[in-house]
Length: 228
Image 1 (cartoon, helix red, strand yellow):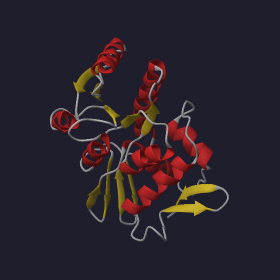
Image 2 (image 1 turned 60 degrees about the vertical axis):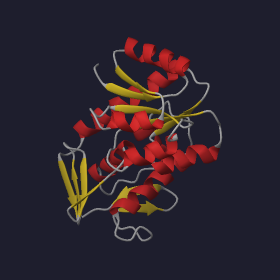
Image 3 (image 1 turned 90 degrees about the vertical axis):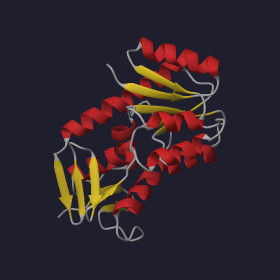
Image 4 (image 1 turned 45 degrees about the vertical axis):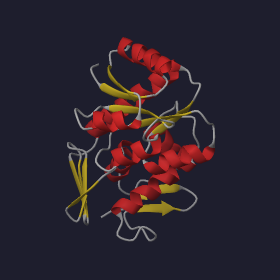
């Protein structure tokens, strides 16, 4: 294990403890103590995963997440001190892949990190190397999605969700099945998370998101990818 993690946390005691535990697990860790440092770090070697606190000096975590998503699909786990649904939903809206509320169990955080990285690798290896449906093209090896030749920036979880559905056209997945496949058994959120990600995917890949013809809703059952 030699994956790089960017840890963005202004509480230096917590950052030091997390860095120690992550390095103990074999990760390479770069620490940023404010939003400005985080964005500067992203301009160098891209990390394999970002742990991002919301309440940061200079540039808050929401804006950092928004900025990262303009150019990268690196997985992001948000840390929030408030257990409010609106904070979690906003984080997901901006492109976060997961979230944890402080105080949290470090072992649970490590488990989520490993699960996200493991699923990213497994899903990339399991699907076809190239998928094309209409104007949509998915290069599985490069994890690159284009629509009408224009590259579309997806979050890691959005990409994994799209590749799963696209690799099994016509198969109906319930929200619970998608949570299990993409988020894993250890995920404690609810099925609304799936709806948020599907909506974002449609906005990015569908010509008319309100009338989708690629990712279809099967009422009372879930979602499926259209068959050619």
